[in-house]
Image 1 (cartoon, one colour):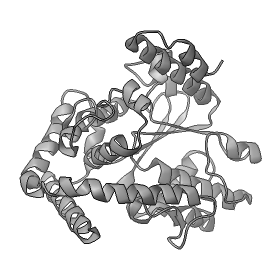
Image 2 (cartoon, helix red, strand yellow):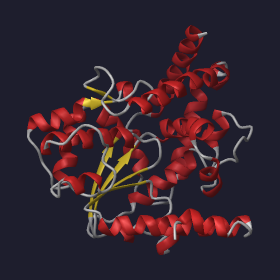
Image 3 (tube, one colour):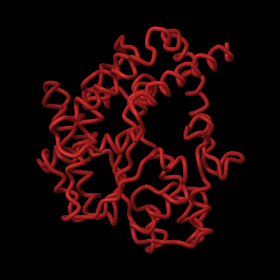
Amino acid sequence: MTRFLVLGLLFWLPRDKKIRIDRWLRGREEFRKLKQADGVIVSFGKSGRTWLRVMLSRFYQVKHGLGERHLIGFDNLHRKNRAIPRLFFTHDNYLKDYTGNRDSKADFYDKKVVLLVRNPLDVAVSQFFQWQYRMRPNKKFINDYPAHGADIDAWDFVLDKDAGVPRIVDYFNGWAQFSPNESELLLIRYEDMRKDPVAIMRQVFEFVGTPGTDEQVEQGAGWRIPGGRLDAGLVPGGHGPAPGHARLVQQQLDLARRLLDAVRPLAERVGEIGPHKALDLQALGREEGQGQGPLVVDLVLGVAVDDHAQALFDLLLDLHRRASRAV
């Protein structure tokens, strides 16, 4: 019996019980995939996972002579060639609801885990747009995000303890306590992937046990998202749309237009926000991590507080200019 059928039959239950059942069913499906997986890719949402999947897919297509049609999704490429690992992509949202392991990462201890992290400030801003334009109402419902249609701006979202920086830092700190003595963990940063995708992807392929030639790795890493964003589509080497992704490209172009409309009122507040508020937000992220063991957030940020504050301010200013030109 599918999760959708079960939930449909239980429409009469109170809201809280339906959430618990939905999360438990999702966790059961994640547990099944985890046990079958040869490796696990873990990330918080909006940390660059789609780009990573594109590069992984292209590498295995080149290495094993497969067509360009499909992105890797757990075991679909493994079914075409057994030498390709079954990779379980997860945001680690629901597994604990099924296994009960809420205070440890014991569920992952017998697996090779690639942990993809990104600056929490960037993740929070991207999550705001995901929540506002793309996240399904039910996902908001079961994951404690602001309600669908809620009147909340980007700044308040980023500061929200259940949706913004505090939640993201807590997530990273939970993984910071993962013990490499009980399993293998490779931590990669989105920012490093942007700077040198070939080097990072070579680490990933060797870690999961499928090393390739320099040419294979370079071809895989050459399939990128311009500027690290999806709104320009998936393109091989940055030249033209990748085969099989026309629908995704169009969806992302439509999203980009809507984001420009959304940016205008946000960008008008640049003067109000300024570097000092970005600095406050950075401090918030560090306060959230105090007393919780080693901080992954320190590895993620990797820049001085003042530098990042200025960078965030410059980004908002740039968004303002782009939005103004698009009018």
